[in-house]
Amino acid sequence: MCWSRQLKPVRFNEYAALRFLSNALRAMHNAQAPDCRPIDQLHTTYDGIYSLCLGSLYLHGLLPSGKEGYRALAIQLGSEQLRLTPLQRDKILNTNRYLQLMVSDCPEQVEDLVCQDMLGLGQHTLRQARRVYPDWFD
Image 1 (cartoon, rainbow, N blue to C red):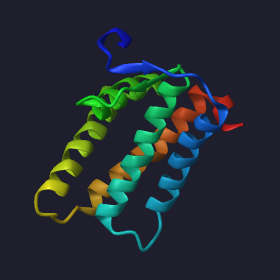
Image 2: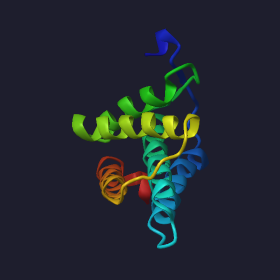
Image 3: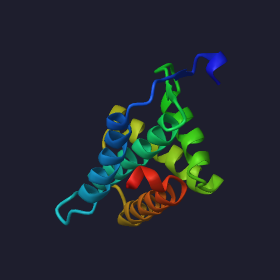
Image 4: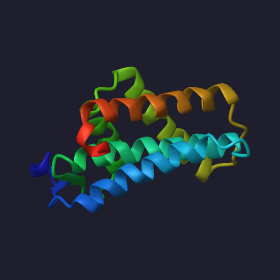
């Protein structure tokens, strides 16, 4: 993927690797706060999963270059590194599209079931990251 300039090689820095993980852990924690509105839960959980996907790419010495579609690319590659199923990957990608529509159009109500599903997927992604990259958590 580097040849397409969609990804760029990066030099590893332990502090940066820990920032990706810390951002994900904080987002997952904040999304579960009792006063968090459903749209905020959805967005915060998505951000946590996205941070784990970016971090998994970073651990392989790569990051998206910021070109169009970089978020979807990071999610696709990161979810593969984290050994998520295609269905789980697609839920994350659909959430990304949904959140983009919410920002550009009129915000609408987010169903609790959608939020709970995404919260569960966020916790699952965190467990997968711990399994795949145990040293990242030490």
